[in-house]
Amino acid sequence: MTEGGNLHSSSSRHGNGVTVVVLTHNRAQEVLRTIGHLVRLPENPTIIVMDNASSDGTSWQIADRYPSVQVLRMDTNMGAAARNAGIRHATTKYVALCDDDTWWTEGSLGSAADAMDRHAHVAVVTARVLVGADQHEDPTCRAMAESPLPRSADLPGPAILGFLAGASMVRRSAFLQVGGFEPRFFLGGEEALVAYDLIEAGWSMLYLADATVRHMPSPYRDAELRRRHLVRNALWLAWMRRPYASAWRETRRTLERVKRDPAARSGFLEAMRGLPWVLGRRRAVSSRVETLIRMLEPASDIHRSSCVKREALKTNRSV
Image (cartoon, helix red, strand yellow):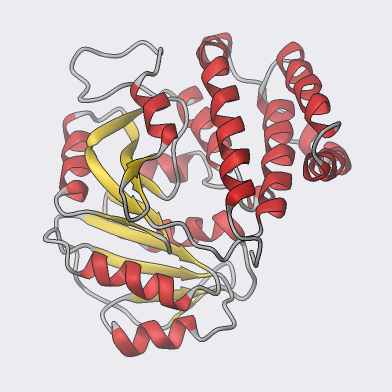
């Protein structure tokens, strides 16, 4: 297996043509819970778990309890980029993504796949996310539902310019066409670069409230590290894809945060250290795509603030 992965078990099930790729790292009990929900889905999807070099026995525990589930174990923790190997390994047209603390609900895979069947230009469908035991709606879903982007009359949901990797279905060919998740982004806003490149390549993305993903936030995460990555990756994204004036505006906004948040300061410094690498990969989006991005900037600021607040409330224990 490329990218340091080794196939531990396999399955010939293909359900209705959908594969679910689950990303995990050192959360054996949580990923086992997620798999338990996925194997009971009526769509009977193929399930591939990307084990990001876990040291808690994740792979063998999955193999023992769910032998039909495929496990690709990475030799190192590759963050979001481990999903690339899972999507390449899939043989189905559509691949649903989830994390070890999220899972698709009954009928939702079918709804998302049907939407993509009917609209060949759609590369990503993001589902509605219900959080916690009380199943409250993730605030990002409200922003997507109220997207100001132009919407085709026949689309079953609003057009969007971003997605939630733990709650989205991708068209495998489109995802691979733009190269997937950038390994150096690791985790934290890694979806945005893929989204910009998909829109630039002529694909569309939509939010589908008829599809639902449950999210039971894990207490095992490093909130400060994630805030640092969010700041770093937002700057890298701006410098790689935005016109210089827009990239400078993003930089100035970040400098304001640096004054108040030590994690943001660390993220800014990391971004600066990576500047030569970023500029070597700079490819500014077209004016068409930049116009769409500018339409969403107020909502993006709200979403970014919401992400930071949520991360600050989570237990600071491990990556």
